[in-house]
Length: 345
Image 1 (cartoon, rainbow, N blue to C red):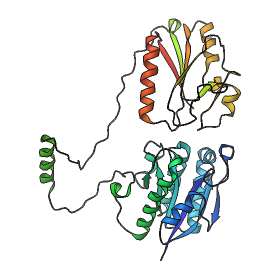
Image 2 (image 1 turned 180 degrees about the vertical axis):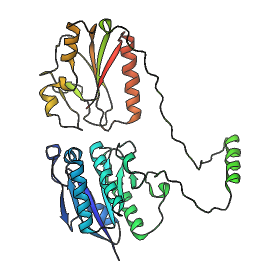
Image 3 (image 1 turned 90 degrees about the vertical axis):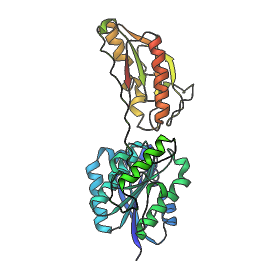
């Protein structure tokens, strides 16, 4: 008997609209595969498409309990075997919503499947109990993502075994007891010998690695300190003269603000991951030059650094983020800056 599959999409991939429709309340389209769900269903073998849930990213983020209740109620009414959410690639809000949908599915005995980039913040919320295909960071690689998700759906529906390496999904971090030919001590000695002989081997228990950052010493006297403004909010001069990317930034830019008391009217945001309306009305809401100028005039800080630094955070790879941080950090340190006000969205 064919397994019943239900899909979850955001407003964009559901064909409702872009950021202007991000507040779209959840709805269920019975018996219909929409957008990417069509490609997944087409490659998933013998399944029955129950329908598609569509929900705006902002709606989910601002009304999570209501959105999860809608998903749970739809699952109870439609009785699917598998829920497929996304792919979300590296879209943070969408990834968070897909993770929530997967969690609701798991809580109701439904197999959850999704697709995310390794740096999507939603991944850590659902990887332990979901099968999340390892996709690229952008929807431009949709044609590569859909077969990976379809393969997972097909195998899980058929009750076949799947593995992270063989089926290209993010490892779930579970420890499982299995029977093998060699006992642990023998395998461990073989790995040790391989390491001592500079031969390749693969550990059976990979350990996570964490960055350790030493906090800088506190500023002793703010009234004499130079404070710089840095943002990942994509704030740039009107017209975006240096073409900063709206997502997955490949650069950081800097601008002279020594003659400005505020950014309002002169700057706006190109950031593609949040509603820009309030920032575009007054960019100081993201980069508070106006408030720093007030503190400067009141003598509470020494001065505002004449150069302002900006990039876009959404979707930007960790490697690029580290590179930007090192480069900006060196420049402001060389300029004698005492402290940085780093703003995001």
